[in-house]
Structure formats: C-alpha cells, structure tokens
Length: 399
Image 1 (tube, rainbow, N blue to C red):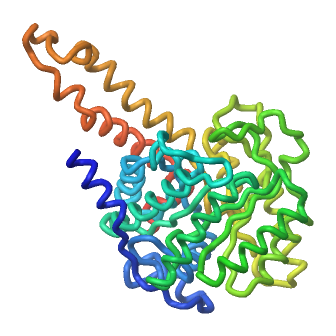
Image 2 (cartoon, rainbow, N blue to C red):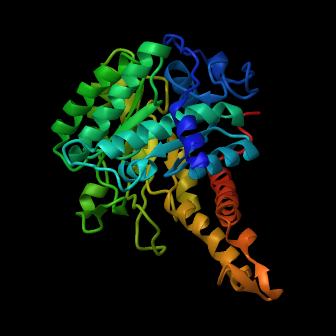
C-alpha cells in the first residue's frame, strides 16, 4: 500500500522547463558543441524535449545519418529500462505510449468506454508525467510521443491534446513532445485534412505531429493488417508530397512522415516481407525538385515495424532521411527472455515459498520477490537496446 502511494505521488508530479519560441535553425547550432551535450545543439537538454529542441534534434539526426529509437512503454518499469539504456549508451531516445499500453499503465480494471477511452487517456497522461519527473535525472534528451491513433481512437488523442494544452498554459510547452495520427486506412484527402486540422491546433503549443501514409502490415496492439492489400504497403512520391505541402503550410509546424515502404509490425521470416527504402529516397528527390531546394532530404521520415528488419535495409533507410525507428516486438521478447532465463536458472527455488535444494525449511522469498525477476527483464531489454542503438548509429551521439 505504501509503495502504491509513492508511485501515485510520482506520477502526479511533473518537472518541466520553459520552452523558447521556435526560431530558425542554423547549421552552426546543428554541428554540436551544445551547452548540455557536445554533439547536440544548445536547445537540446536532459529531459523531455519539445518545440525548437525537438526540431533541432530531428535536424541533427538527419544531418548526421542516425535515427532515434522509439520504444513502446506500458509501465514505470518499462520506462526506466529505456532511460537506463539511453544513459548507458549515451544517446537520445523516444518513449512512446500506444492506446493499449496507455490503458495498461492506468490499469485494465478501469472503465474505458469506446466513445471516451478514459482509461487510455488517464494512462497516457499519467505515463507522460512519470517520464517528465524521472527523465532529467537520467541525463538524456527524451522525445515523449504517442503511437498509432486510428480514427476510432480519436477520443484518446483529444484527451492527450487537452492535457498538452493545459500543461502549456502552466509551463509554456506541451506535456508530450509529439503525437501520431494514423489515418492511413481512410481516404488520403481525409487523412490530410484531419491531420492539418490537428496540426494547426498543435503548432500553437509547439507540439509535433507524426502522420502515416500507406498501411503497415502485420498485427500490433489489437490492430490487425495481416491481410492488407500489398499495394497499400508502398507509398507514392506524389502522396508524400501532398502531405508535406499541406502540413508545411501550417505556421510553426513540426512533423514527420511514416511513409509505407513494405513495413510490417512484429517479427517475420526473412524473405516474407519486401522492404523498399528506395521509395523514401525517390520521394526525397521528388520533393526536393518540387521545392527547388538545396536540401537533399527535406522530409523527416519514420521507419515503422523495425523489429526483425534486415540490417542492410535499416542502413539504407537511414541514408534517405529516417530520423526515428519504432522498436517494440524485439524489446518485448527481450523483456520476456530475461524472465525466462531467470526462471530456468532458479526453477527449483520458485516452486513454493518454503523448501528448495538447500533444505526443506529454506525460504525462497529472495527468488520470487518481483524485484528479482523484473530486474532481469529490465537488464535483458537494456542489452537488446544496445543492438538497436548500434544499428541506428545512435550510440554515443550525445558526445
């Protein structure tokens, strides 16, 4: 009971700094030598980054050819393991909450009506406050994000955005760094119009938006696209240009695009999925020409379905302006695998409260204490994230 009161108290607290108004980014600030991190611009500091700092972080990642790992979290423990990994390997990180993960954070026993999704809203907001309270202590920059929001989940999105606006009134920045709208199953015009509507509202509080084009295959968090038409898994340059053009017209807009290039959620057998990162490269070239720009990579792209992806395809995607990659399924397995190995090693000490190979009267409390096996889960996830950071060239990028 005492532990519950402590956790509730932590979740309800938030530590935030006042964000400066968005200003033009210069190449000099992106080359490193920042006040907080040698390889980061001055705007990027420990803790949750928003507004100009978010914009600068994305620009720096794209300039230097690395992507920020985005990890779905469902509890304070999963948040802690991600922050621990970022601190250990000296890199920026993105913590994101899905609608299901948000509900789990608040508690599955709470009411969650379809037209309100109040448990999802509560869990996401509570999780965001928890991240804000602990992130700065880990000494790394954190992008605080919400994952896929389909049309039926808009009450969840609206609840989070209302919390952002309330937080902005008090602290001059949104609670979250950014949110994702996934209206890829809707007609393209509706997708764009809805995202523009929300972008106008979000830009006023320096909150970023991620938009999805095309459909990511596979299954995640109750959304099943395993039988989706193959053509919808590959975005076209003209579609990406329409999105870029519409969102760029919103003053103060900060956005990224999750364009489909054969991505699939979950893990899959090599050869069953055809990833085509060149789609991103073709789109960058197309939009550069449309803008008559000197920038070879005007779009901030997002790589969904990173788990199990061929490393050569990840490398290729980084070269086309991917600044974020989602990594969920592989971390889920790593977290479970830590527990699995712990149980296998200590099996004979986990069959009852009393009695083990050391004696029939010997207690087993230290073996079944949740802190023992949950810590092994965390350690395993941290180890797996090391591989992800290397794949995305993020290791040591704070300097």
